[in-house]
Amino acid sequence: MWQHEYTAETAAEPSAVWAVLSDLDHWTDWDTSMEAVALEGPFEVGGRVSMTPTGQEPIVSVITRIEADRAYADRTEFGGAVLDFSHTLTALPAGGTRVVHRLEITGPEADRLGPELGPMITEDFPDAMAALLARAERTA
Image (cartoon, rainbow, N blue to C red; front, side, top):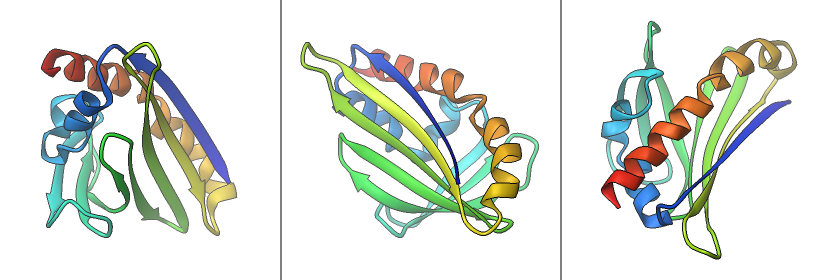
């Protein structure tokens, strides 16, 4: 298994962060690592999301968790590895939100692929998180 977490905080309330995060069809407005993101069907657990990372072929992820204002997660299977992405939102006592973006790579090829893929995938977590939170702050 390979895992990585990135945490950031914002003055925006969880509902404002959730509004941006759950609008999958507009992820490319803030996630510059993606050329295209499109929800295929309803926004629900088991729903499919087509994502085209910049300069790559499209991949399909399956939504594994939705808790309004609290959590979004999806899973992508890739070459014998399972990539579980999650965003967890926690309301801060003084107002605002802590957001944890996590990637966990498991599966039969995780030990081989994780150390290679993981850092490449997560290198943009700080930029993507900053853009997500900035957008949430603007729309709050």
